[in-house]
Image 1 (tube, rainbow, N blue to C red):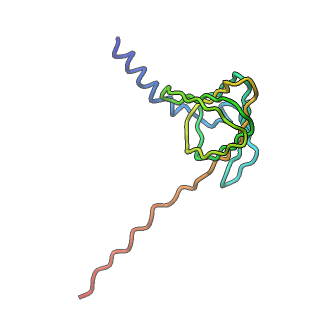
Image 2 (cartoon, rainbow, N blue to C red):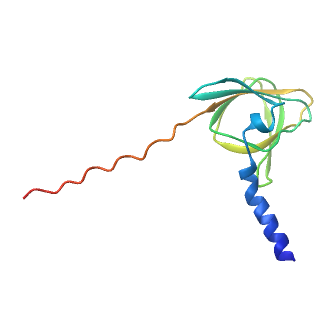
Image 3 (cartoon, helix red, strand yellow):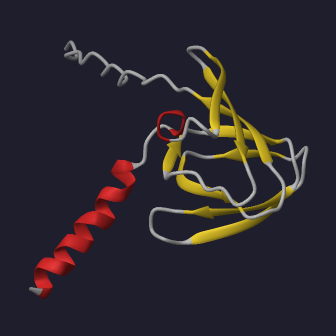
Length: 133
């Protein structure tokens, strides 16, 4: 019976990253698309005091913080990180899966510029030539 429980917990832990989705789809109350084209998607994120977003993922992005405040990030492995953000701060954020929570007493707002990368074709192999004698 314990083996089944441990196996179930292990499978759930492995599935959490796969469950993480587009923030606009899983949390439209906090994430709004401002503009989207083939190169970028710009999101406006507003999270009220004490509110938390569902686990979701972002590609590589640039975050431009519009307000001050403390934010707590929870990651799929259960680890958490708290940051005290200052309005006007701009950060590069590599692709990430997380669940942010506004642990402050005022609304938290950030503009997130998500970068879209095209899948590159594998380089062509150089043509092999037979040396001539």
